[in-house]
Image 1 (cartoon, rainbow, N blue to C red):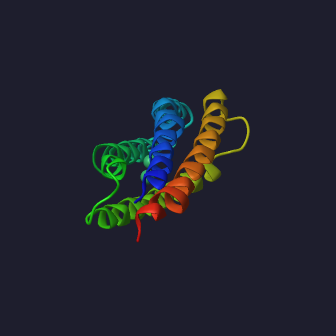
Image 2: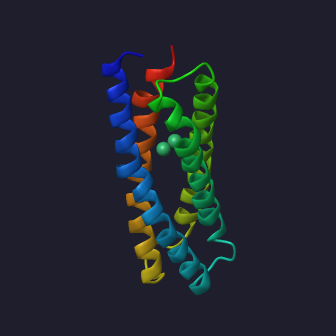
Image 3: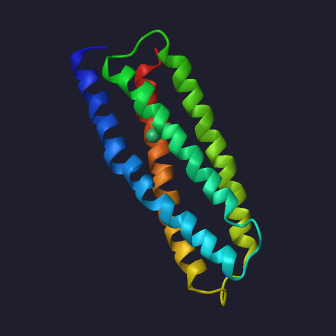
Length: 149
Ligand SMILES: [Fe+2]
Ligand SMILES: [Fe+2]
């Protein structure tokens, strides 16, 4: 990879870290806490568990990117990187499955009259989903393809 492309890749990595990884780490604990408030109020039992599972899965995923993939990218890539990129993209797909499950749970709850925790949860969740979609799209469509050759 030439120096100019490497500089672009490094800028993208930095942007991902500052704009998205930091945002998820800020937003997810609050989302999990709100889901627990909803569960403790109107229920249903087990409602908060998939939110906590997604938060944990995303933290592990971001940790792998930060500890393994992004450092490799910042060095310009190597022969192992494509396999790691495949793993990360597979995890993006798994997160999508977990999100679809959570969306179904949210849709099954009443739209109104269920308390302010649910309203706050819906707002925070919608914001998080928009960030995650942008984050995943940037990695899948711009950053990762730079190292597939
Ligand atoms: Fe990421
Ligand atoms: Fe990712």
